Length: 246
Image (cartoon, rainbow, N blue to C red; front, side, top):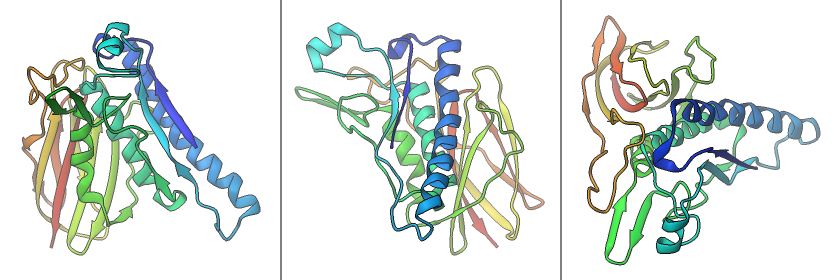
């Protein structure tokens, strides 16, 4: 299964409306996964055949001059792009029981790549850091996460667990709202938590060869009180949280 989230504009010139349209597409990605697996289950009840999403991500409009200089389908990654990547990964975590494999289609220079390279320069994109923030989920058991807000641009959450460690990813796709996260955990008691945040006030901002570390994850304030996790989530941002359980 392929599912690209097309963009109407060039990467660093997105409007709020264009961003909302693109980020809303991840709700359709999740719906498609559920529908495809349900269809497969009608004639493959033992699930001998796995469902893979082997190409996905954002596909913005190309800039001809950049393609001429750097190569075909060269595309910059912005803060918006990183949030899109995080939302896609959250979908895969939430639907882990229905999926066999999910692949980023391109890793260097092309579309939503994690590396941009040219001559002697090589930088990590914002999408690289979206993946880095989700690395602690690897090898864990997916845990059901519910937000009470099914809207396409509601808060995006995924969770996984291993032993006494709970890994959470929170994403705020809204451009004008700081969300106050107040997260309860059923069947376990949070004891402490650490968080890292990927955020820039300009959702069109990006890492460049001249400024490669403009957008990187930074430590972020999070608290555990009364068995609940509390944290502010700025507009167009994603946070990775590791919770130690009692």
